[in-house]
Image (cartoon, rainbow, N blue to C red; front, top):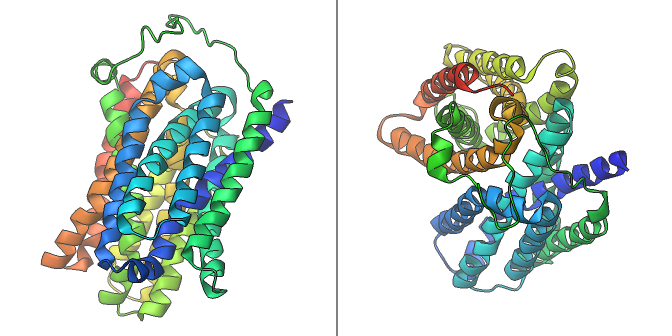
Length: 391
């Protein structure tokens, strides 16, 4: 039964990754049909991100009341409904409306499912599960591309992914009896009743030693990952002189590095603990950023992107997996919720900030910008390791 549930969770992570990259893949076709400026994709993205932040912060309250299994099923159902909403939309305003349940569903399931895995499975599964998310995020644009190149249109692409999400909902509903429903009672654990007493507020979370540090650590990680993702091609083209077509292909080395790195990380966690894995990842990112800073051949920059991807691979899953050990099982859901919220804030704020710097100064600042974000992340993670209690 345990292996069957784990298999279902693996499938869930693949399906969760499918919708995440659809908007970027479909938008070149969408904005022309909707007759809106190309920049309007940012509005939809921000609505989704805002919903995700709100639901992440509420994940502790909802999970304590309903359980991770029900939250996962309901959240995926919300995402499926939103995808079907996108598939029948023919105006920008309707897309904005459907973006609300899209974001609300994504945040709850992300925090709840990550916490469940952190509590019940070994670190290697967390790395491999996030690798599966990467597989889904990679397959999503291919599905949308297939719909566009075969004349079905972007609406059909959203509909197909929505159908897959609906299948996942049915699997999750039928799997509800498999989910462990035991109460976690570590020493000093809070006993929470069904009306949600003793649920931590954001203010009380911030008073937990190490909470602010782990939030900033997550903020920095996602800022670094998303800034690299968004601006790597522009850096290679505008500063290193690589053609846009080749740069786009080479920029994918970053994502390949993350996906392959998470497969490797799963095996590495059998020898190294979560804190050591995060430090290894940070060293690899440093190597990659320094390679991009060294003047010389284009190969150095391309190699640097691979190392940055490999370094990013263990950090996100290992920081999440270490949350119960750092803060106690009874606090882990609340902490992971604010971690997710911090992650999405970093994703929203930091790539556009670099865009302003690139526009006003130079895109050549990308490695320097990444180095600064990495330095702050390293400091926050080391402070976290010293401050957070071990239960």
